[in-house]
Amino acid sequence: MQQAAIRKTSPQTASGGAGALLRAPRGLMNLLATWQHQAEERAHLLRLSDRELHDLGISRGEAEDMARKAVWNR
Image 1 (spheres, rainbow, N blue to C red):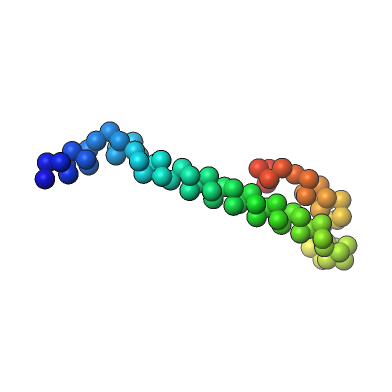
Image 2: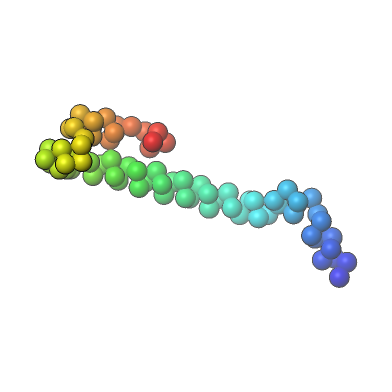
């Protein structure tokens, strides 16, 4: 019983400890997945016809500008 109490109050648990270390890769993977999705959407814009872009209210130049943006820039 005393060991359980020690684990609950250890500095590792209070500051996040192993749990924070396990969450960091998950957060990174989520960020990379978001960037991948953005890159795919931007590439898709370039495949749209001028008529489709017009329906979206985006010019060909705006679509090209969006496609050239770095993934970390929204």
